[in-house]
Structure formats: structure tokens, C-alpha cells
Amino acid sequence: MSPDAYVQVALQITYYKLYKRLVSTYESASTRRFREGRVDNIRAATVQALDLAKGLTEPDESGNIKIDAKKMLLLRRAVKAQTDFTIAAITGHGIDCHLLGLKQMAEEMGLPTPPIFQDPSYDLSNYFQLSTSQIPTSTNSFMCYGPVVPDGYGISYNPHNDSIIFCTSSFRTCHSTSSEKFVSALVESLLTMKDICLQWNRRRSSSLEHLAVPRKLSLHRRMNARSYSVDCD
Image (cartoon, rainbow, N blue to C red; front, side, top):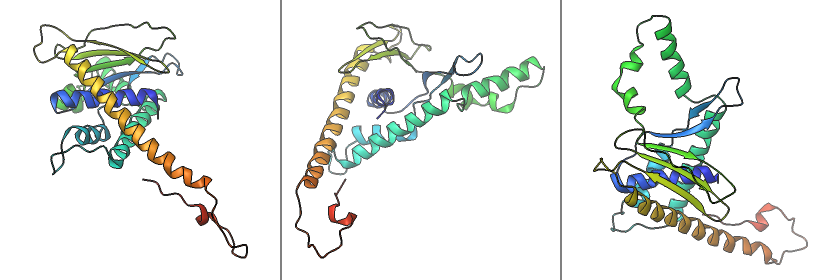
């Protein structure tokens, strides 16, 4: 799994824990590989992240939240979707810079504003209540920045081999946000994701142990791949 995608999924789960919904999320994606390129946006509020967030916060019919193989599947899907969006953004296939370019062209050419930019959904999609960025360093340092909207969060993170440094900010004037509550929920999200991965890895390791046990095979029977099959969840 991509470490960055893993953290971004954790942030989505955390926001859903607190507000029971996902919101437009900004994560900077470098486009420096292109001439005069700067950044595009990786939109982390995916359908796959929402499915996982619901699965980890909403009880089933029996009133329980089970950590099972299905949760691992949802986690992998969410991380993969985030990874795919990241690759698309850094290779010039994101949507934000292209849309901004079209809007700016219309203004510079004196053309009417295209209808898409007048739709309320466009403004909503650019109201980033989660503004995030990975700021990696080899030291235990961090950089902090504020939210970009009054009722949002600014979140930077510095991933290391055995730890992650987070810096979370919000405005005290906003009664619906709380950095302290967000950090507490984020820790819970990360621990839950850790439990899912550990449980799945234990089961996978247990299955792989069967490969080390030799089976008695007839010398007159042709061996094939089916002789050493492994059951996986």
C-alpha cells in the first residue's frame, strides 16, 4: 500500500467519524515534471473511502462493527483508488488545473462564463474543508498551516518508518471544528486500520505456512499448480 494514500484514507475515515459525511479535500500534487508546472489537486473524498468509512463506523444488523476480511477488502479498494487519483494528478490527468485553465481562458478572451462554472456544485467542490499535504523530512520536524475555509481543517503530516507526525489546525472562532477532537478521532482511525492489517497479515501468514508442509504425492501422478493451492480471504 502507498503510505501517503493510507494516511489520506485515514483522514477521510476520521472526518466521517466526526461529521457523518465526506467533504471536498485538497492534497497538493506536484506537476513539476511539466514545463512551468506547479501543483494540481488529489481529491481524496472518493466513493471507496466513503464505503470504508461507513463500514468502520456504522454497526451491522446485530449492532456490532466487525473487523473482518470485508473491511480489509474495503481498505485496499480505498487505498488503490487514492493511489490511482494521485498518479493521474501528477501525470497531468487531474481535473482542477484543466478546469481552472478553461475558466481563465474564457475571462481573458472576454467570453461568457461557461455554465459549468456557474453551477453550485462547482463552488461546493472547491470549498475545501480538508486542506492536506505531506511534508516529508528525515527529522522530527513539521510545518503547520491554517485551514483555507472558516469551518475547515489544515492538516500536514510527516511520515517516518515507524511513526507519523501530524499537525492539525482549525479556527477557534468556528464552533463546529475542533483540532483536539479531530486528532483523537484520527488516532482511533489509524489504530483501527492497523488492527485490520495485522489481522489480515496473520491470517495470510497462517495460510502461507501450509506451503512449507510437504504433501505426499504419488510418483506416478503428474504434478500441477493445484497441488499447492492456498486459500486466501
